[in-house]
Image 1 (tube, helix red, strand yellow):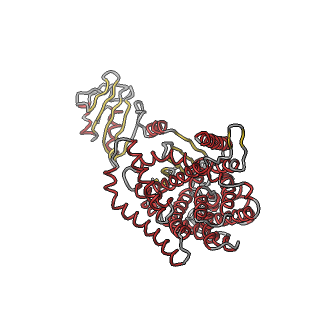
Image 2: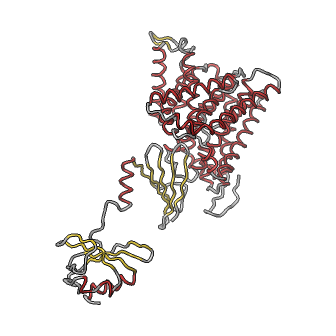
Image 3: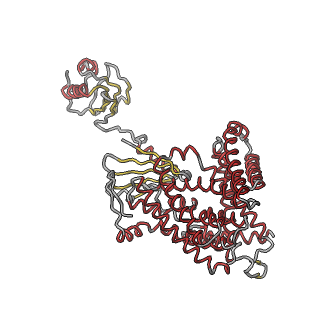
Length: 164
Length: 405
């Protein structure tokens, strides 16, 4: 991804970004605090298709929205965060899964799958950060595990079958 | 006296309001309002529209307006930014100045003016109005376009040219001597003065940073204004235009850590006295003097400017590999003329040059301050229209092709 930055003397700063979907997006930050977002189609880079002007507080609000700071994914089955090879994944435990009612220790998750469970979100027990081997995987709970892609795949199998 | 000033301010404000209503640039309206009144106007009951008593005072406020305009220009300007701006802008700026300055000189020369007047005319026709161009770009939502960097880069180049040109020209025009040696000497003095202030100013930045750490806004303003007027006044005593003195103070202060605070402090003063500057310029012009040769000269200059700016824009855009349409936008945006052309004309007046320069510059600026933004707005249809006669070959991004111009 490449964002070009340039100074507009007497006006402010300009950032040009060509998105993977083939659009061009231009953000102009005026010295008086206004922000302008322009949308160009890649076919005609001379004429913008649409634009929006934002006041400073609006722009900050939008930045938080776009940056994912206000909406935390609670019910998503899989949210991926990639740290090169390592990924963090969220799994929702469906009632028919084999693992329901068993503890992390019983399933021997770390030995069998290689992933590390870093959080357990459960309606009954609330949030558990770094749950121990005695923590029970109930239906409707969400498990967050960190590990490599292969390990995550094995973990999913364990959750569904209830055994390594 | 106060009453007359009040009347003038109300008129200026009225002009501004009308222009805002019509969505035009304010500059031509301030000038027109100034031209409408003046010694030829009448006295209505208590309202004296002739501004005879207050004329020197309004004139003085206008002079202060020039100081603030140039001071602000210096503050905004940064050498680092110019160096960073890149090769294509340097090339584009040089192309623009080269073409338009040459055309300006030719216009003066072929109209039979002496050298000093020719130099002033070339100055008037070369330098765009930064104020109008920046405002038009923002108003028309063009800031995101590809050609905007080039337009503002050319404007920045013109500012540098203006600074150097005024300092040389003021030595030439304002000096008392008539011999070539004397003229050269005073031009050298003013250039030397510029360099000395810039070099000393650079060295003084750490001290200025320390000295200007003043908590009280009132004292801060007094110190800044004191420095501004002192240096501007001093430069006049050595035959350097006071405007250059103001510009230099701005350039030096721009390098300090207080630049932003000074900008905020100066902006309202620049706007207020700037408006009076345009009004007082209008006031100094008798509408009756506008007829005759001044009009023809101004019209010729307008045509020369239009052609010169358009072709410079096309060439500059091409060197930066912009599309012909974007390149057309460059030329059609930088044709606006305003504050700097009038400052040039006033320099001629201060030097006692031919009187035709004043009405000439008035008509010229009025036309291009109104026409310029209109051309910018309609640049798309103008390009389509011109494209029918002259085929500007469209270029696919990344592939260089020749262009028919």
